[in-house]
Length: 199
Picture 1 (cartoon, helix red, strand yellow):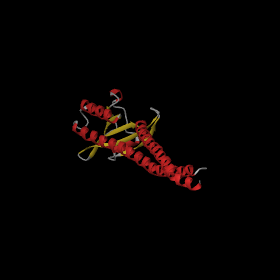
Picture 2 (cartoon, helix red, strand yellow; picture 1 turned 30 degrees about the vertical axis):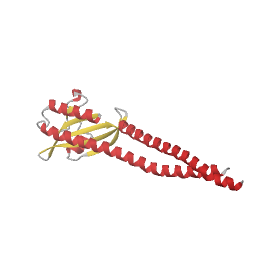
Picture 3 (tube, one colour; picture 1 turned 90 degrees about the horizontal axis):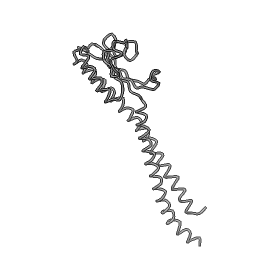
Picture 4 (cartoon, helix red, strand yellow; picture 1 turned 60 degrees about the vertical axis):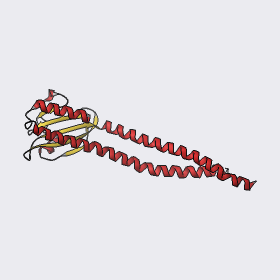
């Protein structure tokens, strides 16, 4: 193997090692940041809906509640429901067909009706997909008077993560290609004196 190829191989090894060492933590950080952004946005919107629901004459103005949940659902790209203190559905961004259905048995709704915020992931057998749920209490004079639950498909979040990771991989690949081109030129210029010495 010629000196030039050996130098090029050494450059390539170091370059790939450095790019991989930088990209792996960056990919993990991007993934965590996107997940955190989506979760905090959902929690913030749920709190906002809960505060707006109190303004809607303590869950009695169903027309106003319907506008609030529809607007929030459009913003979040998910489903938003509001239940009363007994867990009965009073507003649903998916439509009014399920109004008064009991939701109080759902763990996240029970938790919100007890005054606690809950957030997590679960599989929906109805929709056959993973969901991020966020449930917050609607407080009237410090007491739970209902609850807001936001559910979003995790597919959109995973797609955003995939897109960002592929972008980082493409940048890493381009960096390696440019680095190898530079290394080939450098290896050629460094190997010339050695070839002259051998001659």
